[in-house]
Amino acid sequence: MTEEQTEYEKTITFTKLAKYMFGFMFAKIMRDVDKQDPLTTDISNLKVRTDEERSERLRAYWIWQSNKTPQNATDALNEIADEINFLVFQGGIIAGYQHMKRE
Image (cartoon, rainbow, N blue to C red):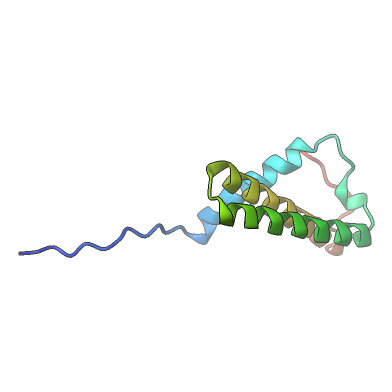
């Protein structure tokens, strides 16, 4: 009898993936504890900053794509976290929040 073997496929649930990315997002927020409360920033300025973060994410992605080292992967994940955080800040303002505590 022969056994068929298939290549192992890595699988993750959305919940676990979200928690994994939250780790990067949270670390970025806490690293910037000395910075201004983002929810007190004009939403137009947050939009500009989000666009800048998008450019940084794309640059980090292309670097990782051309050289898939662990450091380049970490850098790309951190840039993804930055962009998501700025989108979350915009969402917080749209939802009516005026202050964010870093805890």
